[in-house]
Length: 284
Length: 317
Image (tube, rainbow over the protein chains, first blue to last red):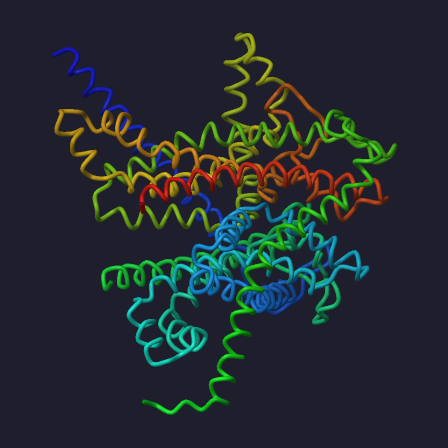
């Protein structure tokens, strides 16, 4: 009886500990969101979206940083997504279990969790040094490299979810594999692949480290891709660590904007993905 | 039988070949990127490594004025902050995974799982400013004085927790990192726990085991490789994390026995100093730090992937 009571007590203790761990995890998320909302909203105003980043000690907005972030994220996706989608297609349709595919899958998973600052150093070495200056192009390329693993992974997974019967039907009609991929598989997996792209956007739009020494920053409005460009994460970094009140307010406003954007994007992407997987998985 | 236009068939064959070549090229590009990263870092790090030799990783000096650089302090900071993070995040992540798979009412499974994934999606710079403006003051005012007061009479511990409570430093960086990697560890462990066949667990319960006993004696042994993989994946993230650490580490190139003292990590040194580095040796030394980080994280992540893959094979096969 004594032994039984001990076992029950031990069981209870560990279950309570696991509940506490979960509550702590949720509390951290709540604390971060709460701080962002309270401080971010007080720094928020219309001029955040209409004015340029100010010089120290004066009022201004984040327009150039928002624009720069949008441009570089978009360019990053435009460069990275085709590579990711095509490579994912190769793994799902051509390579399958070949030695090359296994290596690519492995390396891709490594790239997926590789430190982004390393990617920044890489682009610095191969783009910034030869060009002789920081540029939005370099920033976009660093982001593109970060976008590739995410799109590759989801593309392969989504193509594998397409019922094999559809592929067989297309092949039976005499279509070459490329025609099957383009006319049957891509349309069937479209929403999944697009969701993967959204996840990639969410991933790269908050990245700071790879932009520090590729795109650098720019206090002024600039649309030149060949010149340093302002971007939200680096501006937040610089402004948050500054001693100026106005800059810190802007940093919090920017942090709120970027986090809300990313959370909305990734939550909706994840919901769509899990719906698709449930639907396709049971339909098989 | 349909009549096949030979010109049409030839054209289709060209399309087929070029499409296949394009997908193959994209797949190979992924390999080339990783190879390119390794080679470019080696080339960039070469001047520093040739100048300092092996002593680069053995010396603590980091002095841009005399142009002397050693990586020991950043390596120490990286390892210690990651260890603190893992010491907190592994048990907590295990607890969350356990809660989600064994205890959670089904209605709450989705929302809590989503919340954990949300925490993973928050950009690292947000953890950084939150750590600096919210967490650091709390640690400085409450946790650190408490640690100093209670540790000072215990030999060993008093060396770890001494000096003034700055708020920013190795300990704070470790705590922020723990919060950052927690969702990754929890999510991987949850997925691994879900792969344990219900039959095994039911057998345990059938023998009269408690929930904890089933977890400790059935679920954990069954998913050992996956748990290790999840922990290593979290460790890989912690080692390479840049922005969150840069805000709260204090950026001091020295090794101090106290966890409350400011320090530096490999990634935060690069983030802080790279654009301001003047002189080839300075830049090259920072790239050499990057190369070290690349080697360390690559091995950890590769080992993690290898373990998780072995588990996947077992599940599918």
